[in-house]
Image: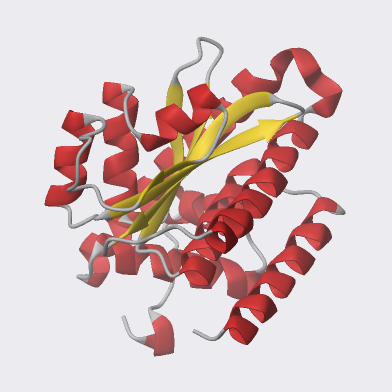
Length: 244
């Protein structure tokens, strides 16, 4: 992908985020869009976002595909990995090759390599020096994370963190708990809908997610709304091109 194309994508993304901020939005929707944009701009194989609860534990709230969700869930269980370190340290964690020593996060590292992930970038989500969570970005090949890569990831992460904080500015006392609850509930219903569609359309779970996403975009709805309709109202979006 050319630098011009990257710059064009970044401009489009910033415009989209600015437009969203001026309107009503769901935090979960913003975080899914963040994950999609990171994959597209940085050419990653996956990315996931985790937010912290009141006890300081990270919980995955988005997973752009099964690879991402699996590794994010593993980090939640182990409370170790690049996302955890980025959150706790409040700084970017770069790993260019997971197969080279030092072997950080041995249990998470082993699982990541078994899933053919070779490099990872962890970026904290922060607002005014307060850590809200972190983003993991995965590469299928060893990768030197250049300063430009990190800058792009940090810009998008900072914008997403602002959305999380801004969404509950009027209810400060409930900010972290409420946003985390909503994001987790959205993830659950979206995962359920993906499973329903994968089974009925005889496709992979990742392909089912694409069906959900495309239907939401075509109809100006959120992923959560479409997922709820699939699970509870019997909605069955057609596959691209009208294929069932």
